Amino acid sequence: MTNSLINTMTIDSLKLPFSFAGEFVLLTLSDVVALFKVDNSFKTKFYTMFIVESGFGKLIIDNEVHDLKKGRVFFINYNQVFRLTEAENFKGEAVLFTRSFYNLIYTGNRKIKNDTAFSHLPSFMDFSKSDLVNFRAGINDIKKEFTQPEVLSKEIICLLLKASMLKYIRKTDNANYIDFKTNRKSNYIEQFKNLVEIHFKELKRTSDYSEKLTISANYLNALIKEKLDISAENVIQNRVILEAERLLLNTDLSVTEISFELGFSDKSHFGKYFKKITQESPNNFRKKFL
Image (cartoon, rainbow, N blue to C red; front, side, top):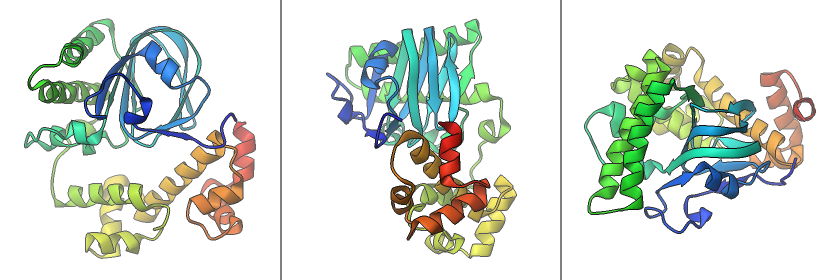
């Protein structure tokens, strides 16, 4: 491991010559390699899309290793930990944008009016030559508005960005994304997942979240089970374990330090929690991957 801590980045912290108020920027992939130094681990407070034209290397997102190759488009969500390795001769572009920028324009259509449809999107999609030409046309339009900003450029980029994300979502061919519909049940589920993302370190019981949603724990659990085929408690546990794995693989923090970081009272409690879900101790998990 190269870091004692995962580097948390915002668009502002990149200290670029120009961005739209720290909410949107378009870069070349060579710039990305320079900014996100190879073999360092990063967690970003923005969405990242990589469009690879040429070059080779690997992109590790959480504990999954992906090849960087021509025609592959990557999408990195908020708070995912990623690391570039063996990166050479990259050509392509990267689009970095925040939730607030994506939600700048309200369209009235829930598929594109906010970013809830981004939840659990695949980390990459492989585009055919013709599909990539079509996809890149939208990115090129974004680039023109960004490099030569005029009146309403932010709004135009926002709409073009929504179109690009819809193309990515359509490419998944997954009905759960394409047929994203709004109803009260879906709202509760999305609110629950958002609350877990914010509070998983201090709140680990289903009842903690049902109280915030002003519904019963049994009803919340039934909704989650119906939609996700796992319990609400499993959703919370999976988020805690994901963060634990990120810290174990990308930092040299001790297991004790990680347990406190994740809101556990002591190392023993954390160790039992981790082993119950993964069937191995935190130390064994770290050793296995390193």
